[in-house]
Every structure is written in C-alpha cells, then in structure tokens.
Length: 249
Image (cartoon, rainbow, N blue to C red; front, side, top):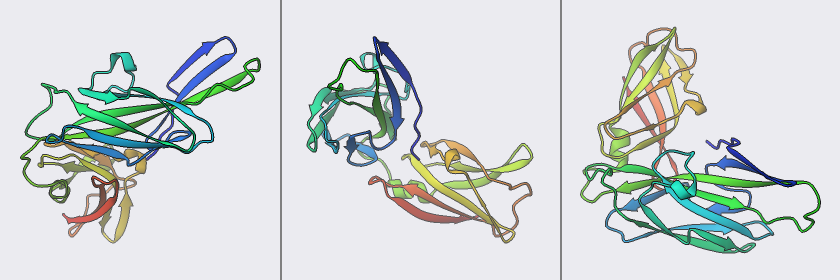
C-alpha cells in the first residue's frame, strides 16, 4: 500500500519544495526491503539504499516513535543513524547504520515499532533563474525492535490471530485479535460465508499490535455470517513477502 500525500511546502524566492510520502521508494532513492527488523542482540543493523537516478541526491534520515509530523531535529526515536545526512551519487549505493540507544518505553516482552524516515532531496536545477518546483520524497519504513527471548515466531502470531465479527453500523466488521508478542501486518483479507465472498478494502488494512485488536470493515456484509464461514488473509513477513493463511469461524 503506497500512499502519497503532500506534507510540507517551503517557499524561497522562486523555489517551492514539496514533500510527498512513499512507503518503499523515493524519486531516485530505492531502499532495500520494505521493513527493518532490529534484533536486540545485534549491535547495529544496516539499511541499504540505491540512487537509481541519473543525478546525485541528498538524503537525510531519522527515526520517530510514530508521529509522522516530527521534523528531524525533534525526532524521538531511540536510534543513532550514521550518516544522518549523506550525498548519494547517481547509480551508486549507500548504507545507513542504525544503532539502538535504548528506550525505557520499549517493552522487553514484545516487539516495539518505530519508524525510519528517509528524505530524498533532488539537486537544484542548473538554470536557477527559471521558476521550478523541487519535490523531496520521504519514505517511512517500520522498524521492528525485537527483544531477546520472545516466545514463538512472527508466523505463530499470524496463525494465532483470533477472528470474530462485530456490528459496524448497518454492516459487519471483522475483528482480528493478536495474543502473540509480534506485530502482524495484514495485506489482504476476505470472508467466505453463505456461498459468497466479501472483501476488506486495501486502504482499510491494518497492523495488529501484540495484545491488541483491530476492526476491519467488510464490504457489503450486512447479514450475520453463516456456519462454516472462512477468513482468508495474507500477512507480511520479515522479508516483506505476503504469506497466505486461512481460519475457520
């Protein structure tokens, strides 16, 4: 699910710089992977990025705890990033080193999610006297901080989701409850009941936190599910791949 939205506009003279979001790749900077897993036992984790543009790019990186509006100078994520600002030449690669600095709010009994921001600022045009718009693209990736000694695996958490239906206005929603200690990111969900298939819209997909639950509105499901109802869903593993599972209700 890649969403682009205009977040900020700075104006200086004839230059306006707009920032948009991308979940995976920027205009020229491509990040390896769609998520970052940080095992607590590791001293650091490396995130690789490549500039596939024909021009150099200036990249700035920072980590936050979930507030997408925080600027780099107010970033509250407990990670040291090296380098925080770097120039990536055209068709070249660069690695970001992430070092966990400790956070009292991070549980040692379950995963904690932080967010890695990577801002790609393209170079200024050679003709500075003309009007132009420069677009800086920010990518936001989840960082899963994983303490040592957690019980089970992310796959166990996905398979252990408990599904139920709840009334949501005139329709029904599907509730997913996670009793595991890992986050479960859902990418597709559908319900087969009374011989019909009902789907959850892609924009309504959510991540189920450890010990938490989410309600997913099911399109056009306005009657109670019948016996033998089946939930088919896909969850995203550590490598960003969708894994198919099903559950009987």
